[in-house]
Length: 272
Image (tube, rainbow, N blue to C red; front, top):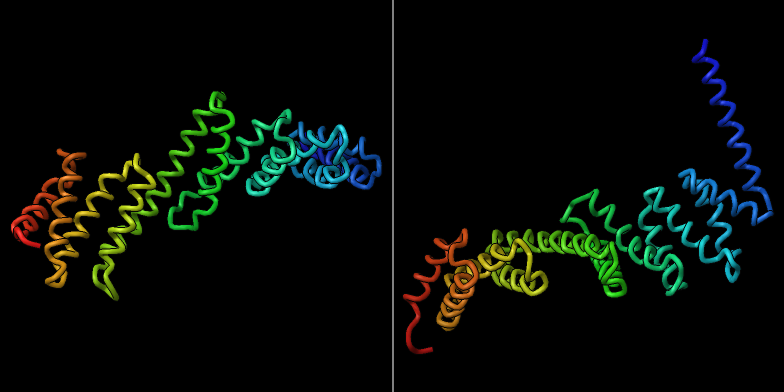
């Protein structure tokens, strides 16, 4: 019996709440709507606050409520986990109010909001446009607020996202190498991709593997080369050997790299 009474009470409260919300939606008293938008926001009823604020933000332009309402709208979408839309509104906020009360937070959440779904769905093979944009937004945040209490976290997120991009490049490097001479010279693509990754992500944990694939692919290029290109490509293998050994004298690929060097160095003549 008590459970039935409690259930009836909950239904009554819910219906009352829905009735209240519907009345507010139809109201033309914008100040009243705004007070309820903030009430719903503070109660973490973000869908309701976002619906009201979507209407109010354009109306409040140029008024005392304009700045706060725009920021609350962004946070309402963030609270609903619609991070893409939230990021767009945070971006609009700090662009519109570059010295506003919430500008630092808006700049931070603009990047962090893009990072959240990337963090949840860690799939490096997918399009990484959002990853690049998140890095860009967080980089801007660090430029504006290098001493912020959030600066360290923003920097760590950037490093994580850069590693994600580096890993995607590593997958491409591996693929090119495994394709070999299938339908073209994929070893050259392997080298180019690995070398670009080394430039773009110089501190990546995959750096050693990028360097290994560079010399490995150059070795394979030399093996399949025509006569007039042999000497130049053998020399490139030797150069890459020294590059690798200088950085990783006790690296995990030393034995293999040594074999590439031994083979190439024995075939280099004194003439070009």
